[in-house]
Length: 439
Ligand code: UGA
Image (cartoon, rainbow, N blue to C red; front, top):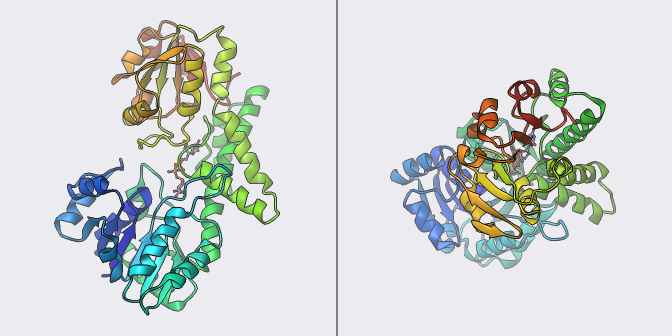
């Protein structure tokens, strides 16, 4: 058992902290936000993640996890401090490291015993060297401190499962002491550990995320070509997936990748390359394809309809993917303003993300159009002239082709997630447009 402190209680920090506690470690989670800390102490998770709240409550009840804003007491005698604060994208595409720097300085000024500081946040290659130097420059007590890289590979929506059953744990260290300590901390997880140096660990995170982003953009690019040549992207993907070198995952063409990671990490790596005088052409292409992909359906629909003005537009799904309330870089954020500008009366449905979306787009008149949030999909579809599907929630998938036909004024569907078969929609009398299947 180790005494572990986790800085930052977002997706990365909180899930890591809770999972360390579940594995028997003594964990303190630190956050500057007092309201958030009070919420977590009352057993409520500030983020929506399957299984998280139950584990929070279970481990809090037995005293294995605590939450605090008092970073001094949380850092001073920790064996290991994990940093899981955000590294948001800046206007030029680079990562904002100010949150990491703040935590690093607080650590330097408070630790009173030898300590390993582990950066879980995604940071540009070489950052951890600087963080270590930074901490050493500001150290107040005469203690040994080292920095290790331990990038996170969890996906939102399945964060707890991904952490407890990860395919690998990457640790980037510069000493045997750091490597052994991290191996001990992770031993109870029984997950293969890949031990490399710090810079390689940092690169593994970017290279992995950007490869997946590239895979998606590649499929979207091929999907657009499929439409032009009369092929079906889903059949193409299925055919490709049997080749083990390609693999069957992340081959789904759609409305482009969103979320807090792929968009940010592709731009960050492109920026890092540029700083070194190198143009990362593959990643740049993935970014370009993704930008166009997000409004692909809107453009298709604009060609098909004379105007959106005064039309009832059903929008099904607002979040960047199912299983999360996160809207960052979601396709809905690009398309809804376009539709409102064109005078559409939007009826939006999302089982989890509507409240967050309403913060940006409050219910009522907006631009030339209006937006209303509905609790039942039927209310969005009833009398609608057109329907856009942006997120493949189970609730959306459960809508049968007949329901569109029955409920909508004109059953005209633009599906950004290829939920339905082209033939079943045609058979139900629905005009169906999707990605990479029919013009
Ligand atoms: C991603 C990675 O999958 C995680 O391994 C990584 O740890 C995480 O980023 C991170 O860096 O923190 P996440 O952003 O939660 O996880 O979501 P994904 O499931 O990867 O989906 C990202 C986007 O790609 C979504 O908009 C999704 O709809 C889209 N996508 C995914 C596709 O369009 N097609 C696919 O085949 C798969």
